[in-house]
Image 1 (cartoon, one colour):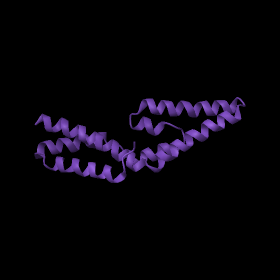
Image 2 (cartoon, one colour):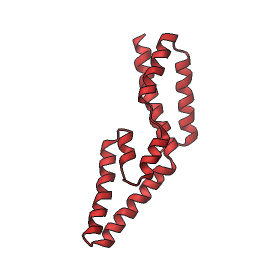
Image 3 (cartoon, helix red, strand yellow):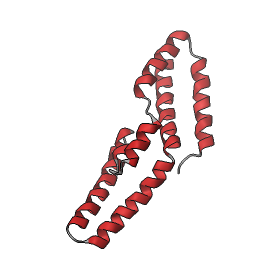
Image 4 (cartoon, helix red, strand yellow):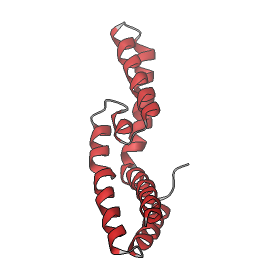
Length: 129
């Protein structure tokens, strides 16, 4: 179940408060690591918008879901080329509807992903000190 935007923002604020309480050296390490690992919502949305189903999932490291989406998309295209028009069109429409939802929720999806990354980095950095 997708978290609401408000809940995701609350999670981000909670993590930011934890980070602000870190000693300077650990806080610097946290920001250095997050700069490398956080994802951009606009890149995610662009990959989704390009309509090659699944690329945006690969961007977030969701290899299984990305492969599944790409596979359904390619099956739909192949079926269209083989003349199995109805089934190919149904597959393409179905994957499009699923991906449209992800496109419209891209900001929240990536923010939730980034929160998980920040929390993991926080725990690594806070245990090192």
